[in-house]
Image (cartoon, rainbow, N blue to C red; front, side, top):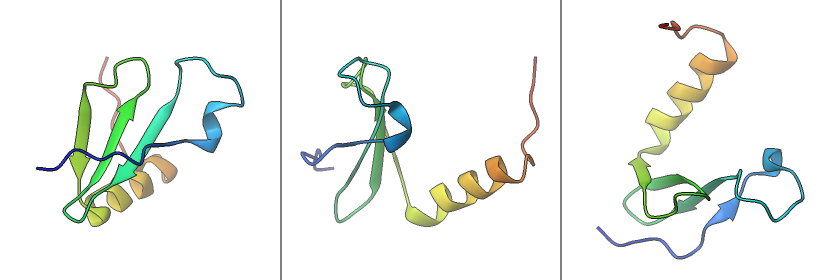
Length: 66
């Protein structure tokens, strides 16, 4: 899989240059997510799977486990 080079910082991460940021990038094969404090670790997913996760979060439909 090709590594993305076009990482974008989430607008919810604030305006500072700190390392508490969610970053998103895309390639022809997938969407990629990473935390800026651990850039070598990234998740790859499809647009549909990410949309499903976000819909579940917005609907509070995900079970929290202690």
